[in-house]
Image 1 (tube, helix red, strand yellow):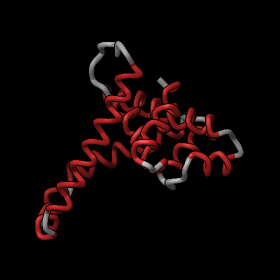
Image 2: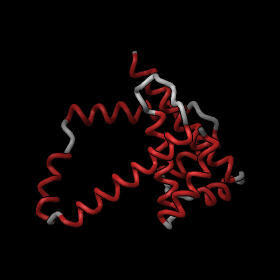
Image 3: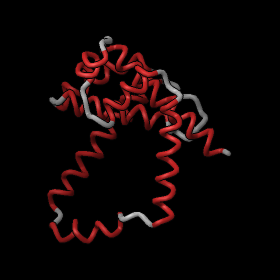
Length: 159
């Protein structure tokens, strides 16, 4: 499925007019596809990935449209519903520890590409320049890092 990465980014960039947003949506789409709970193989991976990405764009658009209509008062009261309980915080802490363990298992350039993208928010060309590697390699590293973390966390969750 990695073969469709650049193609999908270009497609969404043309639709959205923002490469950074397009890359974020494609990352999220890959994560969604990798996190699928179904064991049924995907018949048409390219179509499935495009549909997932377009659904994310539509969901985000709806959310933003709704947000613009809501009053500030509603947003203030909403905050208490999203304050994590101590139990949830512990779970987030455990998840973060698992993620750090999984990332530590990755080769340096793979881990750094992922962190520079997800934590520092650098674009693929910026990461490529920073690490002295090609953009294609940056894209491959990020997808591989996401895949690795997903698999490892799934394994650790099972135990």
